Length: 114
Length: 114
View 1 (cartoon, rainbow over the protein chains, first blue to last red):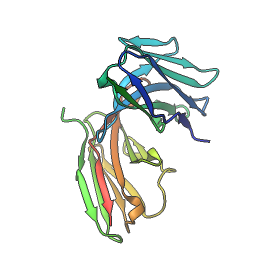
View 2: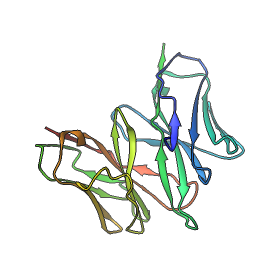
View 3: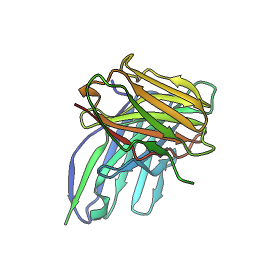
């Protein structure tokens, strides 16, 4: 089983739609969680961190369910510029240390069309 | 800050040749990651270092791959001998160790082995 699993999509949605991405992780000791965005032929960049209580940044909402080892990203009012690959990322700290192993999901491809 | 710097940006080499990829992390970051990205397998973690010490190299595909970090400002990933199946984009990322800290990626090296 992969450490971080995502539905690869692709998701094709019209402008203005709401779209949700899901991600599961296998290591219950994982401690921090993120969503990254990757544009075509570019490097991944941080979109937002995911906090236990859930967090929102404009049109983007991230949720974490530690019991189910599940992370989600909701995008409201999709824009053409949201078209990209969205990567779920899990940081699992080595025991007793402050540094961790960053593991990426395969990514979910989103295309927003007019 | 210049960000994470990788070189070369593109590399085309013949099968059997040695390839060396280079990475300069962001100053002050103490963890460095090497990833390989392909369409089929997504972003795979090859190896990561903390304070220049390799922590986990379980993702290195085989003995043909080796990585070093002789000091805090430089790391190399070497493939010897290279094979066509090594063709991919290789990313280096650095992070300041801790919980919810952002990983910054270089622009990647696009390797083609013919």
